[in-house]
Image (cartoon, rainbow, N blue to C red; front, side, top):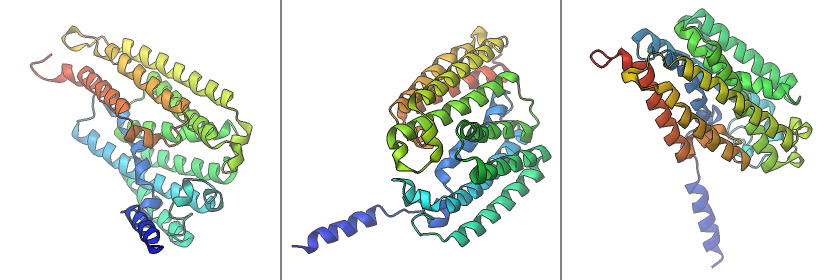
Length: 312
């Protein structure tokens, strides 16, 4: 009788065993969804499906996946003791002892070299953007990680540089509205992430010293301010770009509705304290996904509809 629970426990552990090998999991492929931001500039410009543009955007995506993977590996090596105290991060391959620190650092160097190499071969400006991202993230990890406000700014810059990378890789000029939406959208997600961490873990967990200087009310103020600025900036862009409306319909203006609802849906997750991992929200929230698809359809019609022969 006593063997039954033990067998059941072993079966449960086996069922939970990750399918991907430790080195791949340590590169955090789930977080690569953030790198889709490199497509935002070509999409907004209506040039995403031009052959040269889509190739360079795809190369920028791959390069950012590799360089960001290198940063994740380095961070996990540095934060190994803190991660072992975290209820979720302790299961990461390096913290769990599945991947040695030496192997992780070697893999990080390989990823960084490949990523930067692809970046500079694609476009010098893309290589510089990737190098800037890597330097900022390493300085953040070693010196600035536990400073409040700077913490928000640096992590937000990672999202912003992804959006900028798509523009510089494809030689597409970035408008002031695009940069405002990208900048404050990044701040919205990062402040929401910290708010969720503080609400779900509290400062007593000791996994992030910068949380000790934040309060829920302060972080709520930051992500609400960022959300408002994003919505106003996006709306101004949408109204400014409705002049070439296909079939006389202001498609960009219509896209404000799903954009606003998606912002509110994500804010709901932040307020509940469940937005600690943005990629989990994007991959798991069906309502957010549906709103994203609707927004994408409206934007696609707006930027590509008038360019289809015979339909203008």
